[in-house]
Image 1 (cartoon, rainbow, N blue to C red):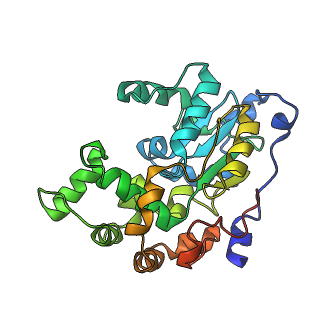
Image 2 (cartoon, rainbow, N blue to C red):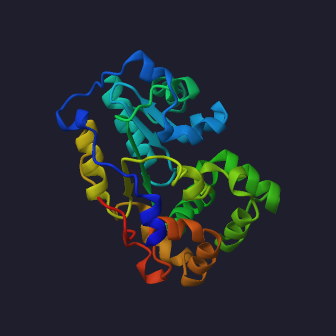
Image 3 (tube, helix red, strand yellow):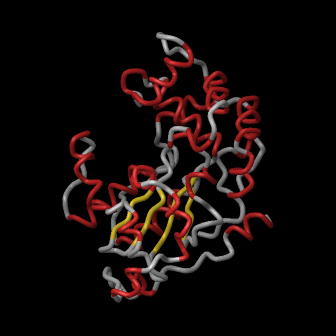
Length: 275
């Protein structure tokens, strides 16, 4: 709890621009040219890494630290549609064309000010890793080709790997070299180095997406935390033994965000986060 309080001590309420219904924040040229201390740590990263990590939009003056397998597609869709008025598509070519609208590079980050709404959404590290395995590895031809290539390189042409082998495979890779889908939450969010306004969690989707919905004035529709097909088979893979093994690898994530080390509490929202 002390760790979490220390990390979150600078969290603030929603900026006044959102409270009064305005979607545009007036920023002077001098402020726009400076590097905000709120996101100074991001400037040590190259642009390619920034593009995989953040979504910035100056229409709503918000910056989203993207955490894969934690509701990121839903959030990116909302940001894109409210920013452009264009309906989001999952078509690969369409996805490649929209990254520019988020201006994810060092130049764009110079627009971040004290009024910028900075947020992220996290998920229990063990459940998140299972979701990655089930969706990107078990998914086979529908899986992520980058992850599947790494699996083939590590386990042979069949690419067949059970969940425990996948856990050990992830553990063998330095965190900065991991695929974004199984990079640590601490590493992915730069928690403690970035001054967040809000951190939500996928374990409490109604509160999390309602908060983001109010910020963006966007209707996410019906949110059901148990609607994902993977939840129906999770217990077959994510056993208490697997949970303990993942905890030992991602202990910093569990402690920093207040997730329980107890298997029976794997779907509970983390302690200490304020929604």
